[in-house]
Image (cartoon, rainbow, N blue to C red):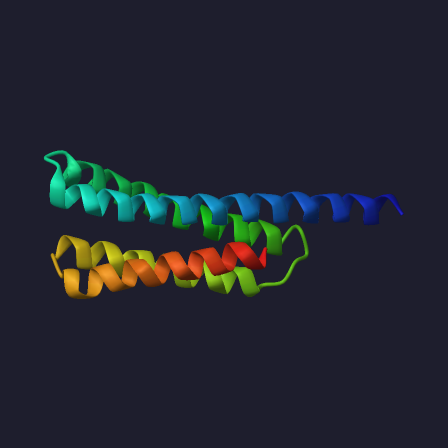
Length: 124
C-alpha cells in the first residue's frame, strides 16, 4: 500500500514538472516572436532574439528531461518523450535556419512550434 502511494506521488510530481516544462517552452517560443518583432524595429532586437534562441533551446531540452522523468521513474506513458524529442528536433532545425538567415522557413516553423507547444500544454 505504501509503495502504491509513493508511486502515485512520484507520478504526480513528474506530471507537474512536465507541465511546467511545457509551459516554460511555450512562453519562450512566444517571447521569441516578440523579439523577432523587435529585431525589425530596435537596435537591441538581434541580441535579444539571439539570447532568446538559446533560452528556448534550453527549455526544449528541459522538456525532454521532464518527459523522461515523468515516464521512467513515474511510470507514465512514453508518448511525451516522443513529443519532447520532436520539439527538440524542431528547435534544432529552427536554430540552424535562424543562423542561416532563411526567414521563409524560420518564421512559419516558429509559428508551428508555438501552436504545437500550446496544444501540448492544453493536453496536460
